Structure formats: C-alpha cells, structure tokens
Length: 219
Image (cartoon, rainbow, N blue to C red; front, side, top):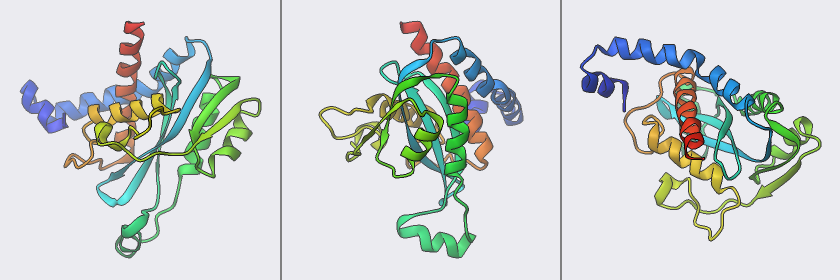
C-alpha cells in the first residue's frame, strides 16, 4: 500500500505512518545483514539490477540485488541513481541536466558487504552486462562467474520473469518480480512513485527482512 492508504486503512494520521516507516527503515538493512550472518555462506548466488525511478522516468534509479540460488534469500542490495537512456535520454538531459551514473559505486559497496556472506569459491551468476566481470573478479577472485544471455520479459511477473524454458537466474528474476508485486512504488505503471532514493532503500530493506523470514518459516 501507499503511505496514504495505510493511514486510511488503519485510521491514523499519515504523519504517524511516515514516522513509523522511517523508524523501521532506519535499522532494517542492519538487521538484514545480522540475520544473514547467522546463515552459512552461500555457495551459489545471482545478482543483477532492477530499474525504477524517482519522481519521473527521466530520473531513473538502479537497485543492485543479490540473492541466494534456489532459496531466493535476499543477501543484500544497493540503490543508485543512473542517467536516463533510450528515447527519453535527450529529453531528460535537456530538462534536468546531466545525471551522474553511480551504479558502479553501488555495486562495489554491495560486493564489499557480500564478501561476508558469499563463499570465496562460490558460483556467481548474472546477465551479460560487460561491467560485471571486472567487479566480480576484483571482490571474489576465487569464485566462478557465469554470465547468462537475457531473455524477453514475460507478461507475468511484470516483465521480470523471462520467456525461457529454463531460466538460469530464475531465483533472482522471481525475487525481482516479488519486489514489484509487494512494494507498491516498484509496481510498473503505478502512480505511487519514489520521491527520495533513501526512502526506496528503506522500503526494500523492510520488505527484504519479511521476505527472508517467510522463506525461513517454510523450510
């Protein structure tokens, strides 16, 4: 739900929802790391970027996400701004000026944290982004990095699930689809948009905690 809809449903002031949300978000990412540290190091993981935006599609954001293979446990994530691309790139530059690309910086922060959770000789899978192999080799020199050619998005899963008989990074794509389904600011064609990247990061952290706890309860 949006924060306004939460306030309507619970019959409380919207400021109360904002205050409680920020309180929960302030510690959620730290708790996510603490709970993941209690688990054995992952032997197979998958990572990639999920794209969304702040305020307008002319200001896109990237969410670099790493999950454990098969279990779909979320290990970590980072939110970063990126420049607009495609048909709206020229219009975005004209209206909002140059927008720096912080994806590489965010990926390095994520990999630094993930060294605690991923086995040094793990299998790491991603799509064929040309920037990924260098960073994986730098932070996980003993790991085996497998790159996967991306497929066309299916209607189900809001484009995150692929039209493939067998998707090698299904765990990641399924988790991205769940993020879009359960975090209303990530739903495609939504009118509930992110206004501040930090709020998006907090929202994802809160969801990731609940996501992992539900998965643990089913094992």
